Amino acid sequence: MTTKSAMLASRATAGARYANAITELRAAYVDLAALDGALRNKHFGVGDADGGIGPSEGFNGRQPEIPLSLRHGTYASGALGAIDNDVDAQTQAYLAALQAG
Image 1 (cartoon, rainbow, N blue to C red):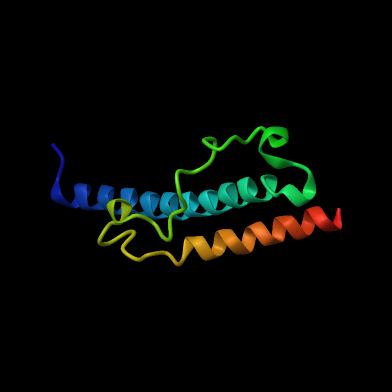
Image 2: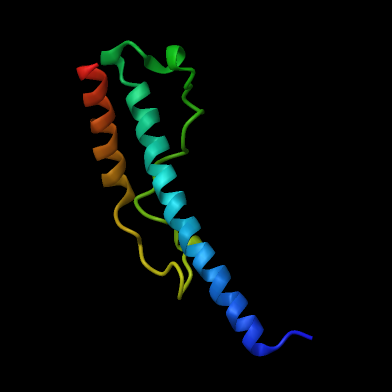
């Protein structure tokens, strides 16, 4: 039989996993959206067709932050920062690397 203390310990473990997953989801989202943006940049000759990234192959609109539906009151309660701003900054970093290379 499961005890309340065992369930609380399991909750804490699941919560830590969830917090880590949300952090990784945010990082992956920023990176993928930035890579899509950099690869679509016409100034570097990549473009949609050459990069294999069509108009429907990316995100369906960029998220300004982690959606409310994915937040948890204890383990992922905050907005985790402005994702859109991070995507823009990372895209610029990728474009600068393309220009330098």
